Amino acid sequence: MKEFSLPLRVYIEDTDAGGIVYYVNYLKYMERARTEYMRALGFAKTAVADDGLLLVVRDMQARYHASARLDDALQVTAQIDSLRATALNFKQCVYRDQQLLCEASIQVACVDPKAGRARRIPKQIYQVLAAEQ
Image (cartoon, rainbow, N blue to C red; front, side):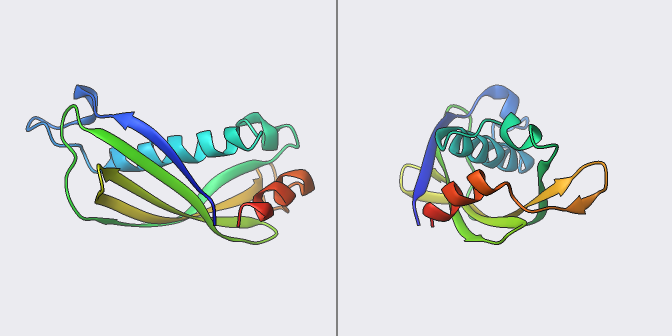
């Protein structure tokens, strides 16, 4: 499995009054990493939307190990853990140096927004994602 890594910096807007990253911001960091990973593969956010489909988070499990703080330099990783016709699972981590701060398993489903149902990932995207495993 190939791993994508996105460097980020913790800004004041990411923290609580004590200078510690608010828990939901780790999920935002992971969203950015998934988005940039797909862009690096040649698929901007509009790639699936051009087919009238959306990629949406269907399920997520996270575990927090340590806190990031104001001005920390972070690395947010994303890698495809598994791929099916209508969904893919990502393993994602947030690190400060080599210290694991947060890890998550995130399932992203391809859906038709009008019908509200799962649809197959477009063939050209699926083939590229399959090569990443």
